[in-house]
Length: 455
Image: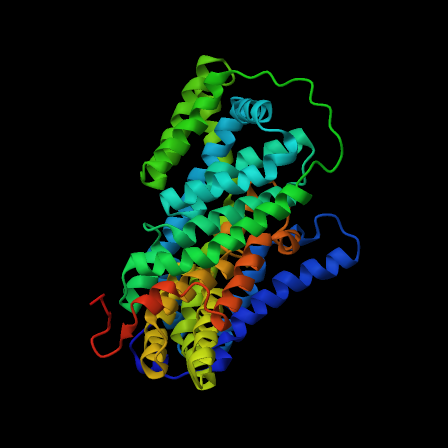
């Protein structure tokens, strides 16, 4: 947030452009869907909806056009936004090249020859969760697992929206708990607590949510209709790029290195097996780039729009409203949860949401003596809940983008079982502190801002 006088004034009206974007984006899809239009939520391009919100921002905010564009461009050029955009491009390239050389079909046939189709949806949730815990990135996990999930659903007659929702849920579970995740680091650092203590509380809330999700997926994740799978032949060599991507991801390599290595390896195998020429390889890479252009543009625009709304006091207005609602320990926890949730809805970036909400949340903890280890857990959990539900979040957009328009973000909303289960167990944990064992054993000393140790 800028330090100038403009940004210091809290203004609820500064959120109007963002609300306009959401209203246009979701409203157009709802209206077209009610009219029976196929793929209704893809008929009105999302970057155009974002552009309408941006135009409203330029109209209602004070200052010259040049000043407002500087603020907008600063948001577009945010490191997190640009990093996400280039992950989109790399993910698109890897998915397209691997598919063109037959890697997806080979991987799916291998999986179906080992795991029965009725367990594959739950299996995708587990695989995504495991990779995300190891790598700390939900977007990277979705990029690696998403193409396999899409092809598996088609081959086995599984519900494509459900298996995509399962992948997102697993990715958010891992991102929320991983010790190397940006969200975990941001949550613990802003609250001044040990990562291991936050993990203990977080894990006891997230684990029952994950178990419940698995049970649901095992029950409802069976094929929609019986599909006779007669050909499960595969070339094991063509599975190698996916194995390499997963291994490199688990080893903690940078997501660009991971996806880049997978793309090059898939390209080499494709050329060796004459699936395409070198020129075909480069064309597939570019095709993967262009397939992600809508998500790329939307992310840039949302980054710029969020910066404008924040600069002109929209985020500060939300912070003040939430802090005014807090009266005691329980309402303080609700306030912290609402604060980070609204920040995530406004920025569509869970790490940024935690950073924005972190200091006010710490102040709430000091005032109402809420254990900051619980606060850190709430910040991470609720940012991940909303990040996995927002139809314009990076995770949801990239997952839907990998389906080539077959699944819209709003189709996923009723199927996000993990996010809903996590939200439910977190709310219960506020009033029935079943996950607070470490808090009871080592109470927090608010004077020294540290946990009391065993005597």
